[in-house]
Length: 135
Ligand code: 5GP
Ligand code: ZN
Image (cartoon, rainbow, N blue to C red):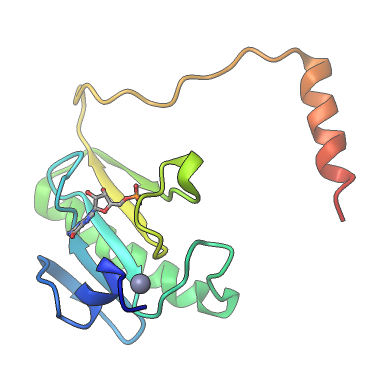
């Protein structure tokens, strides 16, 4: 896609700190990292979000994700990591070329996890039924 920043990183029209790549994916450091070693896995072909991502690429995706995560964690000495994906503007997606965040975590790094909501068992059961009703 011509105006897509991540397509331009894939084609080397824009620079990035690339730390790995294979036939289908590229991995580079996030320009505004949440933590030391925060990286993005990006498919070389343009897909808007995870629902456009071809399911027959999932095995290759997970293999590359595991390989890059192990390398990053070892390099920065992280104690844990978050694997994240924002899909849609409401979920915080800013770049509409599907990508997965690898975020190294450190004991007491001060990053807060998502807040939880208080829902009654009835409300949870109602949501379950709404989801089961979609075919
Ligand atoms: P999103 O919110 O769409 O899931 O995340 C987009 C991520 O891409 C952000 O963490 C942002 O810092 C990163 N990003 C945006 N533009 C660039 C860029 O030009 N180069 C690199 N390396 N990362 C970028
Ligand atoms: Zn793109």
